[in-house]
Length: 317
Ligand code: DON
Image (tube, rainbow, N blue to C red; front, side, top):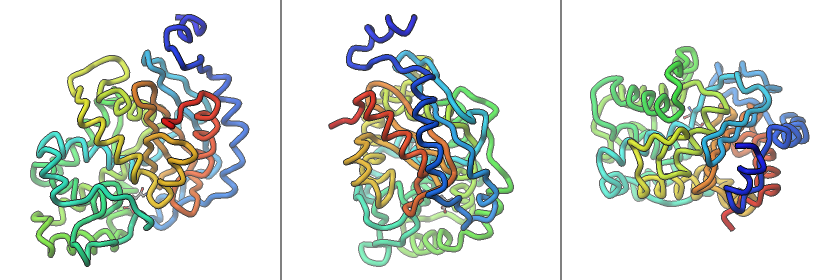
């Protein structure tokens, strides 16, 4: 399909081109100077702050890429939506959310929040809820992590995806707050396993992807868990609605409310500098730029999304 025909076929969406994406990328490239590459995990601090990429998967599955699209980075918190999907597919939504809330937050991603009061994590997007979610995936040892990795490979149709051993080791040796949350939730009776389960969380954060992979993940949840090439073996409207609603409520942590006001789309960020966006029923967007704002979200990534969404009127509201 040429772009004009495609524009006619996708009523309401004018044609997106790599040229448009490129213009948006160049306009926002300099925003990396306003952010800072995460270095609380020493290995993450080695990222090239100037790297930037922007990827879109359109309704028909067509991939558009600009910038450093071959550049790999760790998905970090974006892995939380994959883990949530697997846990809910295995245990059912009610059993997962009996142990955690659907709440938004005004706290940073690694906050203990109400683990000491109600005893339960606020939501599955902040670290506490995400660590708990991964512990709910069945299997011993590395098995739950392997399921997450396999699902990322399936959604992106990219079998070469793996995790970074050095980032994993770095997370494991410095993740004392996460370890604290893990044991507090064990004390609260929410977690029943051993520290292998926490290691699986560290491993899932260390899975390396590209902006294109993130756009395909965004597409998957935007389209009822149907893959960009049309494969529908995991098609599930309820699960897609659940994941998208959590992305909208808490995917950008304490910035989620303001982000929903300005961008207005389910999105999930990671401290590796990636953001994945779902445009419900339509497309997926993946951006990458490692310098983060004060909330832990990619600075240039946010501004690229904002411009793109405004230009194509993609906000839900
Ligand atoms: O738990 C951590 O500290 C990281 N491995 C993941 C956190 C993350 O990506 C939060 N993001 N914005």
